[in-house]
Picture 1 (tube, rainbow, N blue to C red):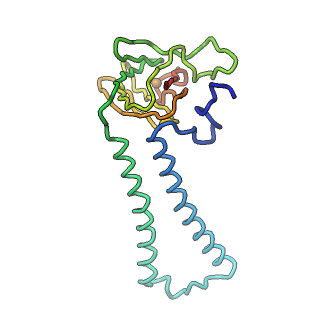
Picture 2 (tube, rainbow, N blue to C red; picture 1 turned 90 degrees about the vertical axis):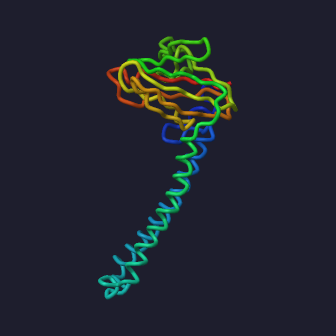
Length: 217
Ligand SMILES: [Cu+2]
């Protein structure tokens, strides 16, 4: 298997393989919500099938002013919504929480490239034009951002011109880069590898040509 495709990128229709605890949480939440989706869909299809094939045998007199039925069809969806909302809020607050970072990386969006700064390092990251066999067009950059695995990294994200958005799907991280404002987000990647992302906010003609390549070592 080509090293570039090693665990970092799957079929475009699939979730990319998760590399961070945040993304694990997002995938789990999606599975959790899908369970209730299938439950509701099954019940609705079953009721429709019964009504359409056999006529209404649920008791017509209960459908108007049927207090019991009204209580049931209000309470059950309510309980389902709460069962979906609680884990969703839990994940939302966990994602929002910033721990003590071991490294801070400054991410600056430009029309149309990203630049990064950490420690004494400051560099621009342009899409790779000198493509080799196996390189991913519009995902590879000439300079990779390199961070350590298994340590909490803080990203300080801003922009110099228009609003951009810095995100990496496989790590479950996405944050707007807004001129005049510094947004922050944190991340711990547990699996070394190459992770790809790009700009997620329409920022001009070359919006599609400002990829992110993150190498986790
Ligand atoms: Cu952009």
